[in-house]
Each structure stands twice: as structure tokens, then as C-alpha cells.
Image 1 (cartoon, helix red, strand yellow):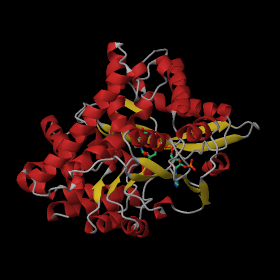
Image 2 (cartoon, helix red, strand yellow):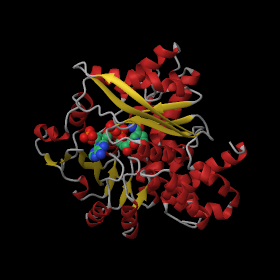
Image 3 (cartoon, helix red, strand yellow):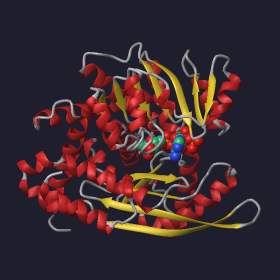
Image 4 (cartoon, protein in one colour):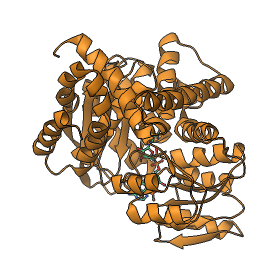
Amino acid sequence: MPETVESVFAGVVARNPGEPEFHQAVREVLESIGPALARHPEYAEVVERICEPERQVIFRVPWEDDQGRVRVNRGFRVEFNSALGPFKGGLRFHPSVYLGIVKFLGFEQIFKNALTGLAIGGGKGGADFDPKGRSDREVMRFCQSFMTELYRHIGPQTDVPAGDIGVGGREIGYLFGQYKRITNRYDAGVLTGKGLAYGGAQVRREATGYGAVFFADEMLRQAGDSLEGKRVVVSGSGNVAIYAIEKVHQLGGTVVACSDSGGYVVDEKGIDLALLRELKEQRRGRLAEYAEHARNAAAVPDRNVWEVPCDLALPCATQNEIGGAEAAALVAGGCVAVVEGANMPTTPEAVRILGRAGVRFAPGKAANAGGVAVSGLEMQQNASRDTWTFGESEQRLREIMRDVHDRCWATAEEFGLPGDYVAGANIQGFRRVAEAMLAHGVV
Ligand code: NDP
């Protein structure tokens, strides 16, 4: 890390104790931006400010379960940086959520959103609520209570949340309904990831998974290779994973394994997407049931999916799921590229192991930017009361992911780091935000 920012990092650790994920995300960016600071010493002025959220809200979320028992969760919204536009970033409902997770995600989001080229700032939120095993009515009551506090902090020109782990179409619907009721306004642009019936955009549901695969395709093409015939492993079986699997299959690769928190399944003929979607999107069941319905598939409980050999790895579940041991297993299995669909799924140690072995690596803030990019398109359509077709929207997503790829590639080259997508993404994202922050003065 350059000396100029080392003291900033020490300050971040001291001011934010007990938040290792946030420290990890900040360290990764600060380690990358040295070449940009050397060329533009004026950027140094914003480094400390960029690591401090503009606003952090923590609130009580009381709700009643189906037995009439009162439950209490903790809700969060971290409005990290609005230099480029309204705060924008998803909501995560998962028992592991605490302030440090929300801050790491919000910090990443600033640079990801900058990379898309759209006018959106960075933020993130969520709650330590576990929707797993909860009835629809319980989820609805939780969402209504969560929004009863959150509504005062958000708005189409202020802060625009979306989904993330545990927050899909169902939750966004309940959140939007409560926002509309409390405010007495039909502000479609206050949330993205909405259903198509009430202001949602075509391809938003598919965008993160499709986008990650488009990025992988660009990366392989850059290396004179392609997705055709590739053996692919995807972790997770949620929103990002499902649509990553769909796009890999459309582009000629085969996804042979995917996972959830209970283990993984292997299906050498290729994951049966109709079955997976029925299981996960409709029945909200466990992945192990997949093997009961697919003749040639095997369920492997309580094991890590990264032990399955593959050419391309798409981590689409959660942070720090590929550590040193998993990276070593991927290298041993012949993996040529790792493309992050999830946020920060690869630990710094794993990134080093992959780098030493010559495995190409795409960080989430570039590779999974398709989700927020199509959210940006959803905001545009809401503002102009327009709707675009699936084909137009997918084409736009494809172009955006190509641009994000090319910006990362070109920036890495410009700073003498060819092929380093981490440096390319961090420098390019930082540069855009820093320019805007300098222009705004000390605010
Ligand atoms: P979902 O809730 O739809 O799916 C998450 C999947 O990951 C599930 O299969 C879940 O398994 C698994 N998972 C979650 N936590 C863990 C854990 N601690 N250990 C093992 N498996 C786990 O979330 P998304 O698909 O929306 O999000 C996945 C990742 O992509 C996250 O990192 C998110 O931040 C990132 N992302 C999402 C975007 C979006 O548009 N949705 C945009 C950009 C990034 P189980 O059901 O068993 O918990």
C-alpha cells in the first residue's frame, strides 16, 4: 500500500473496530490506487473522506410472527457516497448482517456504480432477519416494519435500494407497497428490482447473473478463448447463480455443479435449470432435493463446491467463500478463470494464489455490475414512464458489460498493469468518484 494512504487505512481500522469485511474491502481499493495518486497527487485529498460514509442509519425492526410472538431485528442503511448521483445499492436480509457487512458492501458499491458510467452513488442496507423458513405473511410483516423506518431516508432523487441476498421480487413488492402507502406517492423510482406488473424493468431479474457471464465471455475473448465447451462451476443457487447458469448454457458452456449453504449438487450433463428454478424460486426448498428429481445428479452435503474441477469458476453466493485452500483446489483442477458474481467472494490470499498460477481473475465490482446497471435503466424507464423490450434491455446490458470490461482492461494497461482487472476496476472507479468529489468542494 502506498505510504500516503497507509495512515488513512490505519485510521479506518481504528475508527471501525470489529469490522473485518469492511477493512478488507477498503484495503483492496487503497492497495490499488497508488499509481493514480502518483499521477494525480490532488486525489489524495479525497481518500480519507471516501472511506467515511456520508450517513449511517441503524434502526429497530419489530414484527409479529405467525404465533403472535413479537420479534425484533436490526435494520441498517449506509449511505456511503453521493458524488455521482443518488445513493444506490441493495438490501440484504441474512442473519450474518451487521454494520461491518453493510459498510463493506456499500464501499464496494461506490466504485462498481462508478464503473457502469451511470449517474449513481453508492449505498447498501439490510437486516439480520432470516427469511428462510418464514411464511409469506411473516416476510410481509417484516418488510412492512422495515420500510416504516426506512421510508424517511430514501427517495428517487435521494437513495434507491434494490435486492441482494434474501431480498428478491417478493420482498421488493412488499417494501414498495408499504412505501407507497406511507408516503401516499407512486414513486416507482424509489426501489429497483420491482415486478414487471408495477414498474419493473425487463432483464433486471437476470441482470447480475447474465452480466457476470457476459464479462467472463469478454475476458475469455480478450485471451483468444471463448465460453464454448467450457466446464463451469457456479456457487449458490439464488438469483445471481440461476441466471448465470442460464447464460452459460446459452453461450455454449456447461455448468456441472452449483450449491447452497447445505452443500452442492453435481450434474455432469449440465444443471437442469427448470428443475432448479422450480425448487428455488417457487418451492424455496433446499438444493439437496435436486438430486431426488434428476436421475444422474449427486448431492454432496456439507462440502465446498470448489472441490469440483472446472475450467471457469463463477462464485455467486457470498463473501469470502473462496479461501486459500479453495483457490489451490481450483488451480489443481485446471481452472483458467474466476469471475466474481457475488461481492468479494475471493479472499486476498486466494487472489494471490490464483494470480501466481496465471488464472485470470475478475473482481465483483466489475463483473457483477450488470445488476446495478439494469437498475439504472429501470430508474430511467420509471422517470420517462417508458418500458423497453427484453431484447433491447439485454442488448444494452451486453454493451454495458463490454464497456465495463474494456474500461478495466484499458485502465490497467494505462497504468502499466496489463491484465490486472482488480487494479483496472479500482483505479477507474476511484478516478471518476475522486474527480466529482474534488469538483464539489469539501462536503
Ligand atoms: P440470493 O439470496 O438469491 O442467493 C444467495 C445464494 O447464496 C443462496 O443459494 C444461498 O444459499 C447462498 N448463500 C448465501 N449465504 C451463504 C453462506 N453464508 N454460505 C453458503 N451459501 C450462502 O442472493 P443473490 O443471488 O441476490 O446474491 C448472491 C451474491 O451476489 C451476493 O454476494 C450479493 O451481494 C451479490 N450480488 C447480487 C446482486 C443482485 O442483483 N441480486 C447484484 C450484485 C451482487 P442458502 O439459500 O442455503 O442460504
